Length: 233
Image (cartoon, rainbow, N blue to C red; front, side, top):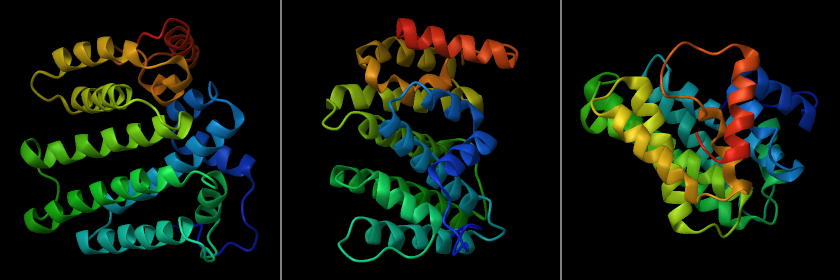
């Protein structure tokens, strides 16, 4: 669950948009390249991902698992025919996924990926660098990227979704400093050329992740513009 549960007035789509800008400006900037419906779906999905990320930071892994289970039950309501619990993001997810039953399985897969990470936390007493546990984090990023791609392009080809997932995994591997990450990133960014332009708003937040200093606000926007224009990360 989140701090936004049971608000007196449910947030507007503009407020959700502002919330993502505050919490994940890179992804927020990338969503500017999507059409209105795609942008609203991405914003809601990314905000849910933020909630799941918070679960990993819970002071005890079991508390994180309770939060993840709350979201699993909420998504069951979102995908069902009955009412959705009064929670602003839950109701927004129900709105933006209306008529998109194909998104329910990928949404659940994302929740399951975070649950797997927390299972490791329970067994090991917290995050463990490298190995299978790091692979679970990479898998969660890939599932989020696939979900974002499908949110923009229902019926997207599997090869396109696989390529997007590899980009997400490689970018996280770079951030974590894993062995072979640079080569992995180079291969993934080349493979991303198979992804059609309509799905690129799901990847643009990764533009220019080849290392080096953090770009200025203008530089970040310029990198995203070029990536969108040339379909090259």
